[in-house]
Picture (cartoon, rainbow, N blue to C red):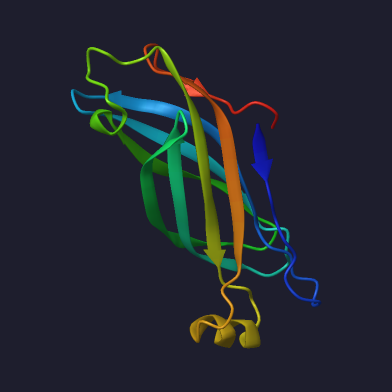
Length: 158
């Protein structure tokens, strides 16, 4: 099940950007780990640009957290714009008691995180810079990833 959450920010008509997980792809399987890529859909519903600051996220496999990541936003969503980005994740076999010879055919995953952004108002920017208010929008996805037959997985219930 895919859950997408977006909150409103203030009374000035500004709305938080939206974030959703489009899919996850198994990029590589080495002797020690799996490399995954989560493709994210981002959208700015506002008539002003929204600079993105940082993504923070975690990946759990079969209920066990195996990866925590941070990635700079490094982009500004133009007014009424949308785009895709990829967030990487590594699944070390030792964290789950696997070896390259004992990989399961599939695993259940939970991918959760938040995107921190700058709201486009001067007062909001000052509050952000002082650490008083740092707006963020959460995202999450769950599903089953096929390991032994690599490919793309689209989270159900989009």
